[in-house]
Length: 299
Image (cartoon, rainbow, N blue to C red; front, side):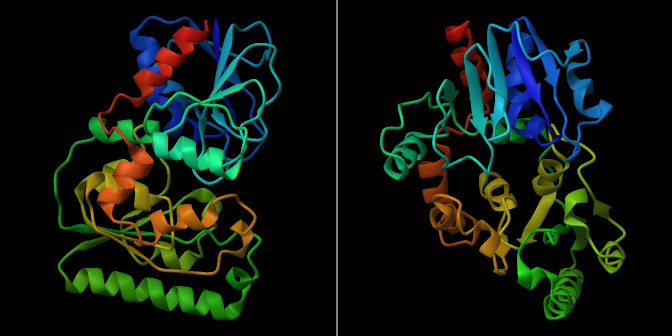
């Protein structure tokens, strides 16, 4: 039996294509649901694989699949993980984990940051597999991704910052309208958007779908994406959609390993060609299949 460890909704973005692959192969797996009150999964998140049973028993498995994070419990069996975006993409590899890397460049970069890191399987970016599942119809739309305010960054809690943020968002929406584009606001519950932001557009979306995510569906039809140094830059570059990054203070991320290198992929410094070559490697919609290969090799 393979246990699929789920703690937060965003896990489905990372694990979704691997769950598709394991289900298609008839692999024996079930959920291990271990929520912590932060973006807990909802019933709809599981519905794509509704025939799978759930358990909160953390033992008795031949292998565990999880989105890599520091809070994953210790298991007595092998643990195959796929790194989260910021939290663990460049973090040291814990003992007894088989970490799947997006590319050879990604693996070597982590080994340069943390000498002694063992080799791991190269699978591609599993989140990008969702791109092959969404309709790609260009529309006269542009997306503004909101700024996460509830983080330990002093500037974001100042009156000066909030005033600047409101003026900036209003200006972006007005620009979209002048260019003949429908402005769309994309956010997440944890961003704690002020009420005025929800009134800027009739089309305001949270994460009502996780795999494929609402974000992929929106990016697929967008003319442009604007964000405040957000991970959506990766989605936009995979999709070939122009993105604008607005820089804001990010001192709360200063301690993360390799932050400067990742930030170059978010702020427009790195070209799409360089990004795909270094960070993504193969973009064929089969990263989840390669993770399933790794799991079959373990069990």
